[in-house]
Structure formats: structure tokens, C-alpha cells
Image 1: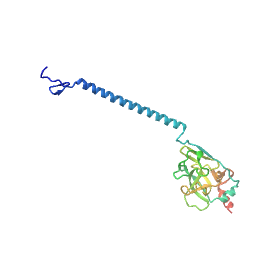
Image 2: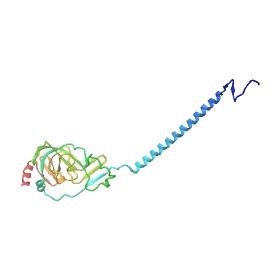
Image 3: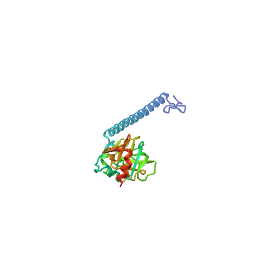
Image 4: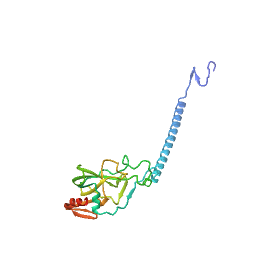
Length: 236
């Protein structure tokens, strides 16, 4: 064995490398990386599932969401006669009701007030829903109005899932022919919101529906041909 030097697996000045050792080391490294990746993936799936369960639980309890509501407006109207109502009107028109504009809250964007969690938290006398109707004027029976169409505002309507119902307001329907006793809007919640408009005096009592040749309100009926004379007498 003289003349041969053994240097830990070196032969002729070169290192001998076992190909099986390389292959084993390579597969071992892959197995280590694979297990690590599977572990991270499993952890991500578990976290995602927990987040979904938490979100579903919050939704089911209504936390972080506002439930739609139906709000009822009620009140009482002062006793009055048809003559007294006519006497106080700023404008009386015979016309045809058009399709209503979209209902809205009396907020800058027309949506539910920001920063309020529920309908129960709305400050009294500050927020309301209203709906505007265009009324095509056939004739002006009293007052100064030259527009071919006037905008009439009524309380109530629906915005998204929120509804507001008014017991006293006039029930305007697109296509119906009416005589309306109108006045300038003096309600601080709505008078300065949106375009110029009128309101119907005494709610439902300020609307006469034209049925055939008659003008009919909840407590008054007369031939439409006599409406102009009735108004003149009431305004004296």
C-alpha cells in the first residue's frame, strides 16, 4: 500500500462523491420544504375559516349593520272647513299628477343620516323622508304661477329598505286629475332641501280628486264647474 495516500475518500487528488448521497440529500430537502409549505397552507385555511365564521356571526347578530325600518308618522289636523282651507292657500291648481321623483331623506345626499346607528337614535324633529311629485298644470284657479309644471312635496316614501308612512298626508297617484290647495313649504326639515316646491295644505283634506264632473275631497264634494266660484267666495 506504499505510495498510496488515503485522504478521507480522495483518490488521485480528487474527492469522491457518492451519487446516492446527493440523491438522498436532494429528496430529503424536498420533503422538508414540502412539509413546511403544507403546514403554512393549512394554517392559512384555518385562519380564513375562523374569519368567515366570525363575519357570519357578526352579520347574524346585526352588529356593524343597520336594519331597515318602517317609520310611522302620526299627528292631528286642526278642525277646519273647506272655506277656511281655501282661504289660506297660496296657490290652487287643477292638474294631472306625474310619476314621483325618487324619495329621499332630508340629508345632503338624500340617504340615511351618517353617524346614526339605528332609526331609534334619530333626533326628534330633525330627519324625515319625503317624496316630490310633478303636477302638470291645466289651469291656475288661484294664485300667481306661470310654470307649466309645479313640484309638490309630501311626507313619506321609501329609501332603500327604510319606509316612512304618513297617516295625514295626501295620497298622490300618477295619472290622476286633481285640484290641490297648495302653500309654500315652511317645515324647517324640508323647506330648504332640493328645488322650489309646494306642499298640500291640511294633508289629505287639501286634495280634491276629479271624478267625472265632480271635485271630491274627504269632507267636501262639488261640481268641478263650480270650483272657481267656490274659491272666489272663500277668498273674499
